Image 1 (cartoon, rainbow, N blue to C red):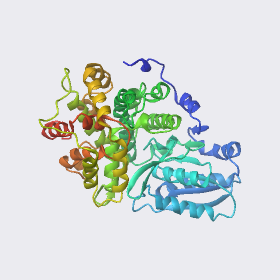
Image 2 (spheres, rainbow, N blue to C red):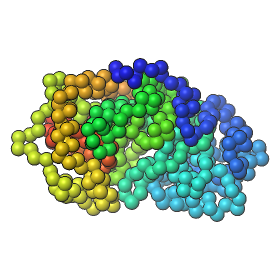
Image 3 (cartoon, rainbow, N blue to C red):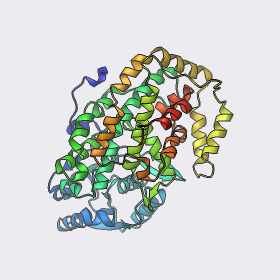
Image 4 (cartoon, rainbow, N blue to C red):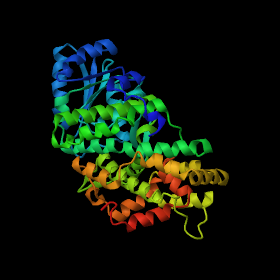
Length: 459
């Protein structure tokens, strides 16, 4: 156990207190009735602009509008996205929100009523409008409700755009519990991914002092908001997708805490690692099954299993890391950029990915320092990382009990394509993680070949 794990596990209230953007979280049966008073305490003006989709309007919006009208809170305007096709967090929707909001007759508070997509759209739109907003979540499906930043598809590339978290949230347990099961399983997949994010932060913390681009040191305060209590929350929330109301609430609390950690850190490092890079690639590919987009958390579930497999393969030998294949030569920067360009040929995001690949390419001296440090301190690093990771089989069983996808075919991918995604996933973010270490050690093809040959991983 690392020293920063020895602190007491902070509560939801502690994490809210540590956040510097969100001031209140209403959570409990009947909490919507407290929203008029909340608006009076925190927001000026008190009139509201309600944003939802057709499903979340039925789940929460209509009832909330009735409460607001009864309390004399004017609903200055409303934007309701269609239920079908499923809403995407793409910039065109932000433009639609801004246009509708700017045409209101009087100032109003933007209110996001919905899941992670509605929240991210309103969050970014509110930031561009220089407005504080209220979040009314309708499912325990993502950690983005309380997070700083929003994941938005822009010019073919899912980007975490900077924007403040909501000033307040109001989460009604009955609404959360009635969400479709796939949304709760998606939220569990997002929560389970923090296992990989913690391991990746240890990798980043190791490479940071050596000058590796995108490598961030562990922030003990933020680490202790998410990692020490993670296993307990996962255990308590496993049955969320089966309709267990206590599990749904535990899942929402855990996701809120991880969001507060991002809000405090002002970045996604505490809760997002290589598993999310797999997901981001599949979002760029518009991954869907029978025309229905795969949820973020379900993509992350497969990304979590893929990343766990890569960890077990890289750290399989207690005596040292694998050796690069014979004749391996590290690509030069021009060669690397050519390879990245080819990997994203035809995609709208290609130029941006190539730019990112150039920014994260390490000079030979830095690569040498990283390789030597990892080799010299391999056993200690291995012990620290594997202490955080359950065995692959146990992780798979846990995700299965939570009704998360376990095989790539479930989300519309072949096993071979899912494994091969690791190459492109390593290219897209300047955020040091296991995939970067594997590539810098000259072991990407070695690890992926062993992954492909395995009788266990992603099967």
